[in-house]
Length: 233
Image (cartoon, rainbow, N blue to C red; front, side):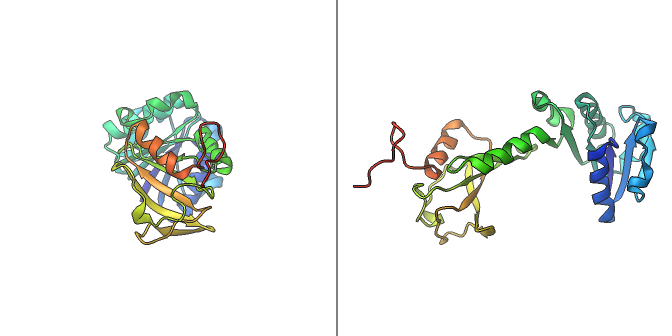
C-alpha cells in the first residue's frame, strides 16, 4: 500500500514509522527544512515542499497513493491537502487530523475527508468510557456513512441484563454487534445471555435522539424520576 503523509511532526513520523515497519510504501511531505529528520524514518521517502501546492503533491506521487494522511498542526492546511488529494488526484482514502474541535464540522466529504481524527475527541471518549457505567459513549464515527460505533458498560440493574440477545428489541437503525466480557469479545449471537458488567458494542446509523434515548433506557440503571432505584416488589 502506498501512503503519503503530510506533516513530519511527531504524529506524522510515528505513523510513518509504524507503516514503514509493516513494509508499506511511505512518503512524508513537510515544508520546513528543519522537519526533514530523515534518519527518524529511514525507510520512508521524504519530500521537502508545501503540500498545499499541486506541484508538491505531484512530485510526491500522490496520484498513485492509496491513502493520504494529513497530520499537520494546521487545520486549514489539512483541509486544503484533503481537498486537493481527493479532487485533483482521486485518492481513494483521505484521513485528516483535527487540531481544534471547533473545526470538526468542516472535516467531511465536502472537503475530501473520508476519516477525521480528533485527538481531543478521542481523549474525551476515553475519559467517558472510564467513568460512565450505563451510559452510551460514542467511540467512533464513520465519515462516509455517518454511522457511529457506540458502547455502554451495563450496571447490575440494566433492563437487558439476564436477557438473551434475541430478546433485546432495538430500533431498526441500531444493531448490537458484539459484547466484551472480562476483556474478551464475543459476537452478539442470538442465544448469548447478557450479564451485568458486559460492555455492549452497538452500530448506529444516522438516527434521531429518540432512538438513542430508547437504547439508553435499556443499558442504564432502573431509577425513578427522583433518582432512586425502583422497587421490584
